Length: 135
Image (cartoon, rainbow, N blue to C red; front, side):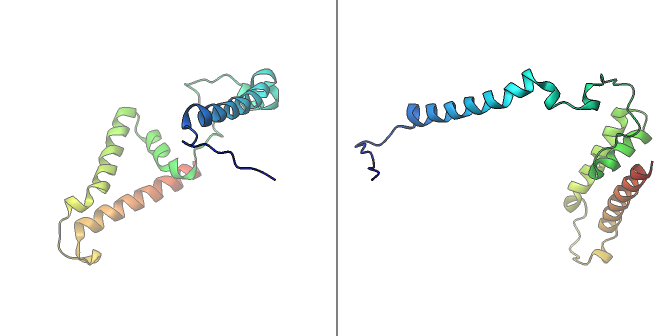
């Protein structure tokens, strides 16, 4: 039968548990890194071996759907800094919307500033996402 060891003061976290956890972590990393470093052909596939060219993005590469609007917007504005500024202003307006429109009215149809900003953000996101998916 298993007998519970008796520790009058209890076991200390360091070094008992820390060293045991480090041993398990190092064994896992050794098992994980052996195939990665010594047999890379097992984990690296075709397109990963092509050298990267920062000035030529292949046509078949597209971001995930939630980044398509930002990706399309970057294609529209030639300057990355300008696109960054415009997107930052847009997101800031959306985040600061409760402070911009301080109307006491709860009905969204009676709050024209709130309605305009919300609809313009949603429609521009949907439009740019669809455009980015099509192009």
